[in-house]
Amino acid sequence: MNRTDVHASWWTTGTPSRRHWLRWAGTAGLLGAVPAGCERRLQEGPAAEPEPVARFPGKVALRVVNDRPPCLETPWHYYREDLTPNEAFYVRWHLQTIPTSVDLRSWRLKVGGHVERPLELSMADLRRMEAASVVAVNQCSGNSRSRFEPRVPGGQWGNGAMGNARWTGVRLADILRRAGVKGGSVQVSFDGLDQGPFSAVPDFIKALPIDHARTPEILVAYEMNGEPLPMLNGFPARLVVPGWYATYWVKALAEITVLPRPFEGFWMARSYRIPDNPHAQETPDALAAKTVPIHRMNVRSFFVQPEPDARVPLGRPLALEGIAFDDGQGIKQVQVSTDGGAGWFDARLDRDLGRFAFRRWRAEWTPSARGLQTLRVRAVNNAGDATPESPTWNHSGYMRNAIEQIPVLVV
Image (tube, one colour):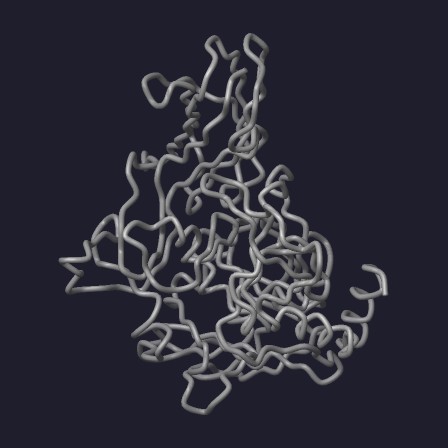
């Protein structure tokens, strides 16, 4: 089955080949028994090492952070593309039982709760509504958790739990308007088709403040980079919350509920919470007494070229390239250092794909001395928020951010 056939069958019938899915899922489930040739230096970056990888349906070989539920990381070289390809886009599920097929003939998106007109919307209903698109970064709250010092528990993501895509669907505000939100509503909750293995496992439900839910950039998306959503990335529809961490981007969306009081489910009241201070910071010896739900992304910047530990020739111009992004304020400036931070110069910013998207930057450097050199990059957004010199720490391993650096050898 080629890539086109997989997407066509998933879109027209909502039913991928179950044998195809289970064959790959079973392979991935055999920890340590990854298909021959699949162990390689996938996650590029400082301290990179061979990692187990596997191919799931509709995906290239991705680094396996966890197999049940699947948590799969994007290979670094795909960030040289403005839009992260669907087949290389990272995967993050929370509950073990995830949908492997959805029949669009029976699937309905239910909208209820504190509304005048409860709805059950088919995919055809959604596609008859006015379409909207946004290019936005989807980033896991725990992206780069493996870089935390001291180390923290949780999925040990490298830097590849993120991706940039063009999302197309219906504005959540239009759906809420159609349902008729009643006065006194304070939040909107979102539930997907994934389930825990036991009834005692809390359902993965997230909630947004009602005013935020009505902002025009939030979508119920049914397309990703011009194609139906991959099954592993939320087919048939998912929430898109630009500028906020991916915990709110509920996949395989099934129910939208308007609430007259704050939602107090596990994944809001107990999990995905950060210290209530400007940098979500605490120390192992002094954990924060007060926490709030994680929300907006901070400013980040990375190199995508050259690769770490690259050998580069003395006296020849070397192209430097990378990406920067934030919560939607927009990237104002990117600076690069080629001497370990002693001096900095401005990089050029590529075309703006939108305030929630990756902003590609480019620079040029001509090495003037042999030996090991450290390249560093930092960014500032339009609100004046800057990449910090040193990473902050919290016990959940969320929101890692710092000036990124890579070593290169001048020969």
